[in-house]
Length: 335
Image (tube, rainbow, N blue to C red; front, side):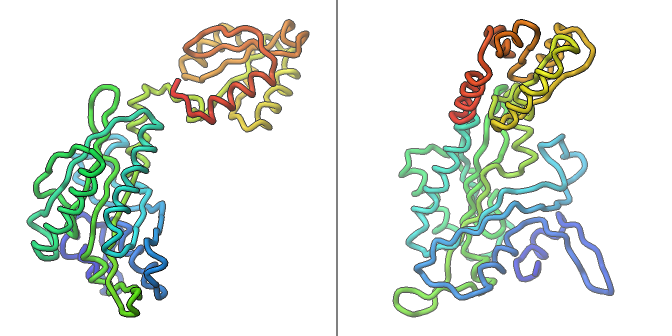
């Protein structure tokens, strides 16, 4: 499989390999050969194209130890991969559609990006003419969208040129996450076909695309970018219920259940600690909402709401708090 895809010749040094019963084996460093096999599993018509094959694929790459860096560069990671098979006249539309997807995802997290067009490396497959044609198509697609880009000479994948999306975090550091790679080489190597409108067999073109890139790297990027202050919709724990004393535990537990039934991620802190201590600890952990319950709250069947940034928001009906929180989650507010 890896000889056929070209990885054995062009990427073997970055693969984990072993020999079993005098046969070479390699752990996959990329998901694309699997995408080829999925497409080749049955015949296709032009009416099915573009065909999008998505995969959250675990890959292993033998990176040099000196380049490893927290979550940002690791040897084992998961890619939000997709391989999109299309006719040649669909390329511009599919590339632009993919860029719009990137815009939607990155803007949701409040992230800005720059684009690099990575061109033919010395170690490549395919002809210079094929590479230049595909590079021109990538240029046309993003130029027509009004996007700026810079040329990253010689840094394309060995099978095709690519658009690399570099995300900037709050400190101005950039991280390469998303990529759109235009490939006419692997469909050729795997003899992929579709039946055209003319009834004849044709070779599809494909793009490899990841939006987040490595899930691990993207988690690292947004953690740094947000300084750990995840917005409500993204926070692992969205609210913590803080009973003032043991006699308020029953009300606190019932409130926690009500919030969980509404779909919120909630914890209930029943420790025998002072309320101020619990609030400070929740604040340090960047929990968006702290919900204090005591005698006053039980009497009014409400909760005292405190936000990690806005501070005390006063006494609130539980239903009103749930409505407010669900609206904040739905609109994906970045606060």
